[in-house]
Length: 471
Ligand code: ADP
Image 1 (spheres, helix red, strand yellow):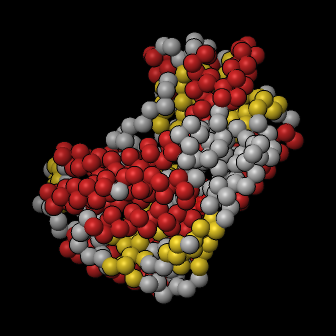
Image 2 (tube, protein in one colour; image 1 turned 90 degrees about the vertical axis):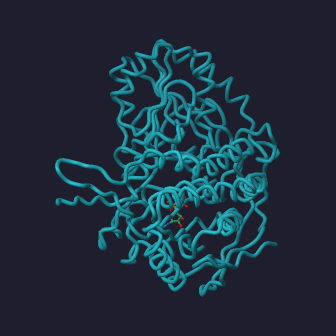
Image 3 (cartoon, helix red, strand yellow; image 1 turned 60 degrees about the horizontal axis):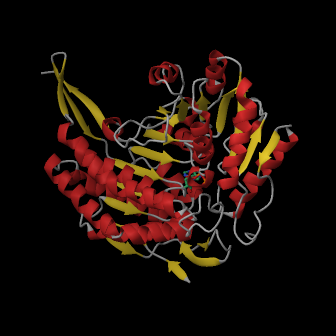
């Protein structure tokens, strides 16, 4: 039984002042695997004070020095790649394939930022003035459980590139993954206080980070509900915020799409990260006159989806992270049935032989209307809704008829056609054919999917404050 009883403050592993504990539960067996001691406000204040002190000198580092730190971090995290994958699978229940990709993204965060620094201009001439982009200060990083280390690495790498110091509060459900990452960061040998981490609850540690006047910015990934609480709290001290929140992403199958390819891809895509992904394409918009064909293809694809132990190479969908999350998804499946959508695959209950863990059947609803709750609310599980449209204009209107705007997806055999549609979608990222990732392109949401952008140049700019010097 693992007991995680250390936080990281001012370059050292220390015992937290907080004494409450939180049980770590395997999503595959629902057995307790360990516990984490939760930090409190005192711990958080200590970490913020260390970051504040470290910022005094870290802000003065040169770009070359920051590149060296990023190289050290890259090396230290790379060394533990396999262990990081293993622990992500066992603690979180992410599939092996997804966990490998996620850890790779985490490692690449550091080299991506080195790439950005090669050409980034911290000083520019605008009008007749000198414009300096200066390090913002102490950044509070608050992250969820669905790709924990990848979020931490990306935000931390950007902070280092910007000359900022950080206090991280990960999800309490990710404590074992965090602990391993912490050891990597420690080994990288950064100046004391540049990186600090406090395990703890959102309404304790997260709330202190949100209200503390010595924190200049919060970079948050998580639910829209929590994002709003943080944004409201942050305004009292006028903190900058970057919020990467929920989504209900449309996947537009245009009338010229190759359905045999696009529909299976759409089904598997909706189940990315076992459906626990803010960017998951969960609303599949298809031409009405092709619904029968789409249903047949989608049903056949769902039959190929393997739900099961995330350790197995062949598994596509692992367990939900917690019983709470399992119940939430079950509620939505029941809601879909009550709302009158047609169940095409899956349904309530656990798949055969998987009674112990938080496993959900790979589920597809068809004949979904865009005003149903299953089409409007983020489910965060393997549940896909098929919605029909009559004209392309209507397809675009349905795609945009959502409070969210994180991602959108288009399938078409005509790239210029797809691009014309992409320009009309209200989403921070539009992905055409295949599920691609570009770590240097900006990432973030329109509307209630968030504020600001992460990654690359756009991400870096949000960790900097702009000063014009008129001489
Ligand atoms: P989930 O409930 O699925 O974990 P959240 O968006 O609530 O999703 O959590 C994302 C992160 O935000 C977690 O680290 C969580 O502890 C933290 N959090 C939750 N509530 C608050 C809050 N009131 N203030 C700051 N952080 C919070």
